[in-house]
Length: 115
Image (tube, rainbow, N blue to C red; front, top):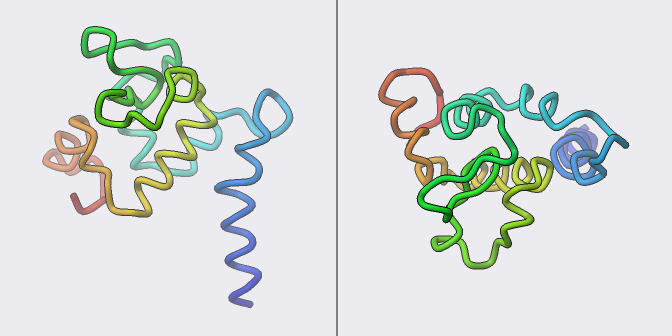
């Protein structure tokens, strides 16, 4: 049973979103499955994948700040499927505090993650 649960989580949080581009569920549907991340995206970019902030240094729905994450390309940051997978990984590591909006939303009681 444990193996089935792990496989289910892996497929539904990693494999299927990787397929992207109309092959699987729309990225907004994936985001709906992660309420804290959805709240962060609404605050950071209002769900706009073309969003650019911080004087041209933050990109995509999560406004990934590239100087703080040199391993991430601008194209990756702007790809909602890639960004959601990356954000799920950050959430699993307890790193939601990298987003200013997460800190604000946490103070307002609008997300449940411990920051």
